Structure formats: C-alpha cells, structure tokens
Length: 147
Image (cartoon, rainbow, N blue to C red; front, side):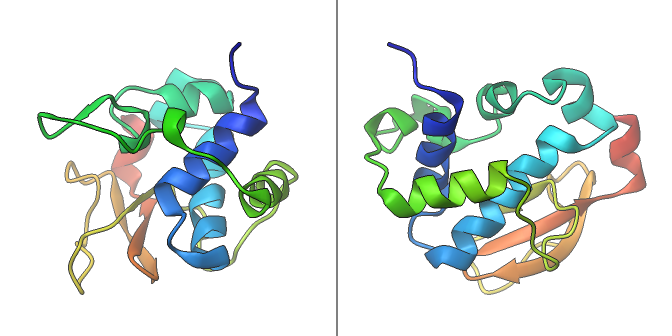
C-alpha cells in the first residue's frame, strides 16, 4: 500500500532532520514546502506544486535514495518509524506554518563543518540565508529563476 503524502512528509522530516530538535525539523519542513510553493524555476517547472513530486525529485533527498556515495543507504524514508512529533510538524507545515529565519529558503544541507558554504547547490542557485543547528539554509539567487 502506498504511503499518503502526509506519511511521506513525516518520514522525510524524521529522516532528514530527526536529530535537529523541533526548530530544526520545522525549518526543514518549511524549506521543503517552499519548494512546493515557489512560483518559478526548477521546482515550479518539475514539481508543479506537488509535494510528492518534490519528495521524489531525483537527487534531492538522501533519504529517498537507495544508494548514497556508492554505498547502500539504510536510512531511507522506508525504514523510518515516525513519532507523533513528526506528524505534528508535517501537519503544521502542510497547514502553512512558516519561520521568519527560513524566509524563502529552497535548500538546506549539513556541511559537517562549523562553516556554511556561501552557495548551495554548488551551481550558484542558492546563497546562504542562515544556519539552524547542523543545517545551513539557502535562498534562491536570481540565477535560480532561469534554471
């Protein structure tokens, strides 16, 4: 039986940011929802406002990949067991929850380093906005509009 969109979202939140606390998980959830609602660029063109398409867009989330860096990925959305907090955050984000610090971020990443890179993805489509816990968040550059 396929997972509902809500279930998938809760699993992505747990997998991508489960160790980041409530604020970190909310920041990741908002960033993912920003991809759903962005009115231009790659996510608008490819995902067309569909959260499932955002989640399953190739190359976007390690938690959806079977292989990462040539190794089997055992931490996928299919191996997650979301708790009530993950559903609450998914519902909050699906209901339009937002965070000023995240603004219009479309990307996040854990650099495994105290410093966030200035640009991410490395093609220059995003520029650093803020850091929350271990994740760096990036807003689109003008270049993204043409991607």
